[in-house]
Image 1 (cartoon, rainbow, N blue to C red):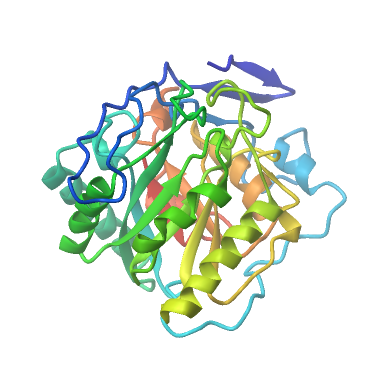
Image 2: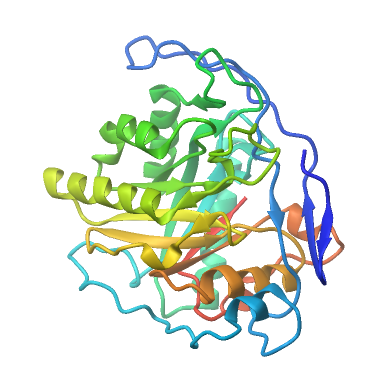
Length: 344
């Protein structure tokens, strides 16, 4: 695992050893009948890389350095005209993230199904109370391709979830009128290899997509040993693919969530192109005390506008230092106000 280190006044720290994902029982009539090896997940190698304040005007925080010498970012971002069926910015999405095969990857898998959905409903109600002017859309965010600490038979360091598991979680989402996201951690694979195989699911109007640079290991290292990266070219490829699917299937616009908590995780962000058929969310994915999270948000979302903003809350990791997890009211104090909020 990555070791803790200090950059100027900024703390970077990581979680404990990776979780273990059990083998799946392959469905009898689905496309993928042979499960990948059950090996260590790299998901727990999460970090938040900076400390400071949300919108600093000086000092040595990462946000201050990111904004130094640059024009003040413009929010909201001027993007393409909204198409019918666009979820953002009319609604705020509140999502539970994880995988039912692991209790260590997030709230989606940590609790039994009924308890998990009840907890999500409580968060949805809390956000409705905090901002009555913005309707809330519940969501389940499933990690459908999980990075692995072992190469597996194909050497890709990733495990694809079965169609049966995806359908199971989709059924849970429909029970609560929730939308669903399929998230991929590609390991030594690529977004170009992993996204198209999910087309049967993404052809549904209430299915959306997430891509996690943390586990895109272009340097050839094992997931969890270093933080991975995507370039704007990778994001643009996903946008183009999803946009074509929207047109071909006559679907409402898709939402694309891109995780980020360091600058190198997403290179050339200013070159991401926008398409009305795909709404892009940059989700601040780091964990830690409020000051760390606010500064990361300022440095990696606010300072480099793409389209819409997201923010992640960790039930356990955000309170490790003895601080409290940010409340909806506190998150709403950020600029811009996040329209996608994910709980892990």
